[in-house]
Image (cartoon, rainbow, N blue to C red; front, top):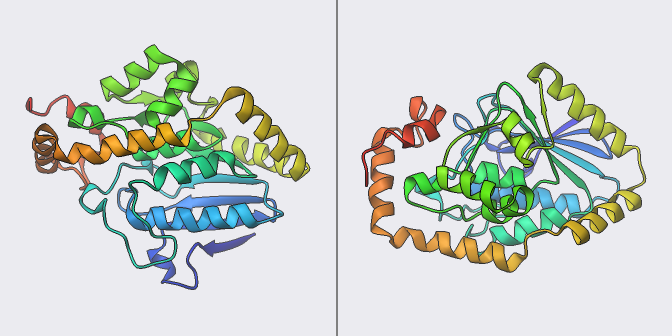
Length: 288
């Protein structure tokens, strides 16, 4: 088993957001680690782009499992104060206009992607998990939420498109418009989680599944995924781009600016009660 920072030759490994653990040539575990809150930031997006380049060109790789080093946060919302920053590093590009391409590439990649969710997957983090081929979640620790509407914004990273396909219109509306937390058992019942699994069994279950699939022929796995994509459908890049474009325009909404200020005052982006209980605390904020 080999551990490799995504940008091992470009920057210090302790500044990496993603680390590859090569459990075998066919099976990689990707560790997400951006303490203290696992915010999705421009550096993480850059590393995801580099990772996807590697995934698409590795002829032996068959399965990738995304998991978090932080038991409280699988992947969090955007680092909103730095959302438009483009860092000087490989893979860096503006989020707006490029995230839809990333999602489409991941959905069509010649490997099976699994999100192993322990902790909070909120906003962009939830949308990333939805873009993976499968999601397995800790019954005790996983929480999913698209909190954007509660902050006078909208989900613009694919959440609307994936949820509409996975859970149907009415449940997608509930998840998007309530801006509330949904646990793993509800996720399984609604259809956006493959299985809700006891936390003590989550690692062994996902590892066994990944190892099983990694033993199969790559061509069969890739073709099977293509066939399911064609029959079940994946969001069009055009629809993803439109949602991304609408989100970009939210910055011009006066009510969004007011809500953002109130969330900052309440503890947005800081270690503490607000981030741990984001959805619940949204309901306590003064009316915009």
